[in-house]
Image 1 (tube, rainbow, N blue to C red):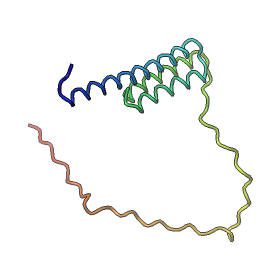
Image 2 (image 1 turned 45 degrees about the vertical axis):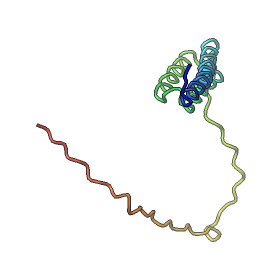
Image 3 (image 1 turned 60 degrees about the vertical axis):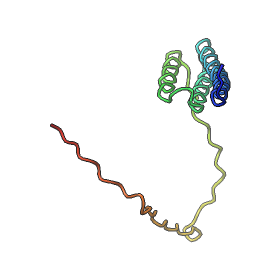
Image 4 (image 1 turned 135 degrees about the horizontal axis):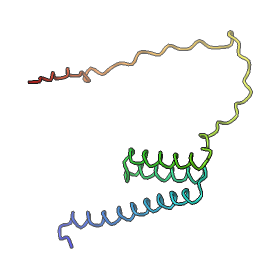
Length: 129
């Protein structure tokens, strides 16, 4: 058991983080197993969502998750699952016919100013011997 105050705190933090990480991993495994048992667009979406949460919380690297999600998508394709399209946009309201007389001219944007302190140094030349 640690004696130093900071080490005691660190041990407590480790326990809390481990519990959180185990829970997230359990959710991922559950979602993936549900997809493998019953491949559908909904279960695939849930599995992808759990992977995205793990990346957001820093539990898994984004490239690792990309590889795993690609594997799930491949399995879904082989199973004949139709992937759901992205979120559907709301239907557009009836647009009024516009006339050139009623339109306002577009305002010109001012060019963005670069800060004077952000001067870049030239890249160092590499020498080969």
